[in-house]
Amino acid sequence: MNRRYRKTIIAGNWKMNKTLSETKAFAEAFKPMLGRPRWCDVVLCVPAVNLQPAIRLFKDSRVSIAAETCHYEPSGAYTGEISAEMLKDIGVKYVIVGHSERRQYYNETDLTVNKKVRAALEAGLKPIVCVGESLEQRELGVTMELIAYQVKCALAGVSAERVRHVVFAYEPIWAIGTGRTATAQEAQEVCETIRAIIRKLYGARVARGVTIQYGGSMNPQNAFELLAQPDVDGGLIGGASLKPDQFMEIIKAADQD
Ligand code: PEP
Image (cartoon, rainbow, N blue to C red; front, side, top):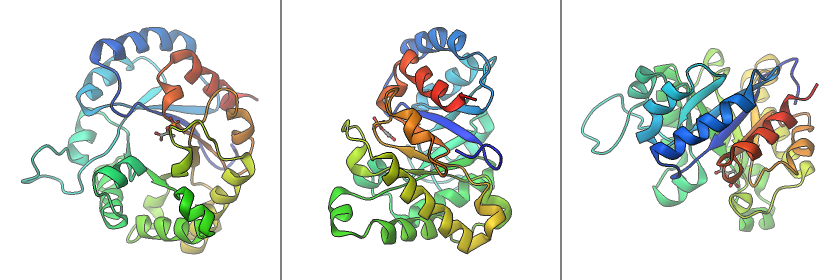
């Protein structure tokens, strides 16, 4: 983390978990624990059907609510989809773009990621852009090239003014939901590479202001070491964000003086 130049953001990704009553129970347990973190912004990415209730439930807290995806068109004949504008309109602040589960199961490509990033920014949302390699790609030794490609595609056509509102999440696919975490050094190397690519595209001043998270089995045991890396500015957390006490422990690790 480098709090001088950029925000530390801890975001929970609930994926397809929690009914409305479970969302209410989480809010009741979590809000008193959270209080007012000094350094760290807290985000919860919740299923679309629970966005509006979650916005109401967390209104009096420091939690921002995020969507898990959006469509890239502002409106039109896209049955079942939700646009970035619609999300913004109800008070959503962030949206995940290009999560590996969406790339894997729903045909999200680097091209659609780029369209969604631009649509989110146009609507006034902050995209959390996920990039990351598979185990095979890591073993082939192409991680950095792949990450560079994903980052460049995501940012094509995005102005320096707008890139300030983009958050990146380095999520090695082999670490998501597997209990296997990247080492702090592996996470740092890739987050540093992401920043170097942004630096080449937009210059040093812009690059040092961009928040880059790590995601992949982050938990209360490994969070502190991962977050201590200079280019790891937070976490995107799946499993451990479903339990208020575990999520809170990770926030505490990010919020230490
Ligand atoms: C994720 O879904 O983005 C994620 C990192 O999940 P987990 O923490 O469960 O590995």
